[in-house]
Length: 168
Image 1 (cartoon, rainbow, N blue to C red):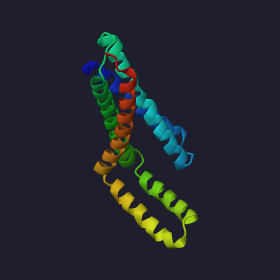
Image 2 (spheres, rainbow, N blue to C red):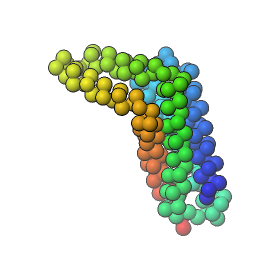
Image 3 (cartoon, helix red, strand yellow):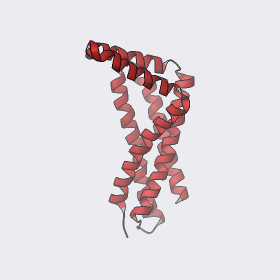
Image 4 (cartoon, rainbow, N blue to C red):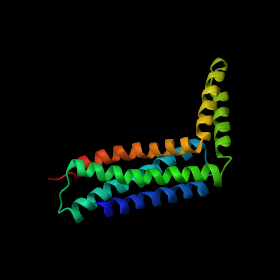
């Protein structure tokens, strides 16, 4: 089981990093909203290795059998590896590769608010945005939130995969 988790966890980690780098180089001219959609799509694609990891374990290492619990554990561990890789990559990106990202992102979000929100709600929304900006300025918090985002999606995929692939 350990080899399967490491193998497919690394596949997920490598794919999420490659898709992140591809988006960094190819999607810079796109809106933040479209980049965000691509980011979630990259997470789901990378976490598809959860399904393939569980299936590989069941078919190649466990004589075609896997319980729901064992499948869920395998999926969660693969998701954890992928999530940790993405959290680390996000911190490297925002702290080293593109330290202006947060300022640019939040300025873009503030501009959208100014054009879509009424004047009386604008101050409230800008204050909320500034609170989020401060929270994400802390690399540990940024790592935690980004890793948890991937992990939660991975947990859902693990649940679905375990339900689909379980065989006694």
